Image (cartoon, helix red, strand yellow):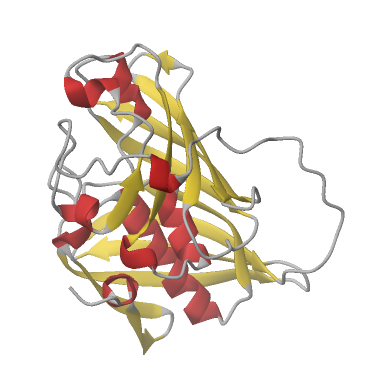
Length: 261
């Protein structure tokens, strides 16, 4: 594969009147055989930003309405408001007559302002001291897992047949071969690893709704990722994510609602 697979697979082309054409590929499929929700979000966020000629994305909220398939798709975009500091629009993802996902996103210029950081990055060994799980310890291969590099301090319990009972994980990740990360890619990386709810036993999960807050771009390198679930109620669970760069800067946060399958 070439180094611009991410660019190719998240690209869309305007046909006018707020409509854009794109193709969803199987290169970002999950083990369930469907395009990853973070991949859909990245393509939708990129397309809406280009259609609006907006500033950097600040926040995006996407609801998944139907199971996606690979192949031709369409983004139907609209502008809700063009404020001085925040521009907001919507993007609907359609595959034929199937409404697959609906996103609302806000964009704005990155300006200096009050900053206070009370959180801390995950406590991880350096990436070089961690192991590559690809093809090892029961980790899946193919699809999305071939498009990213991962480094973990130890194998997740679910991957070796011993779920820990603690639905949390910390890891390093990056797009394959260290490709530069833009804001839509940060949104994707909030939903690019196996859900930590797998540590509760023989479950699989699908995202119902995902909201991401995008703070800043990383310095080149690996991205430290903290994923955790604390509540599973009637088959639905939350999943929180934080992304940090190697300098300890918070890049993005997300919360999603998942459903146990």
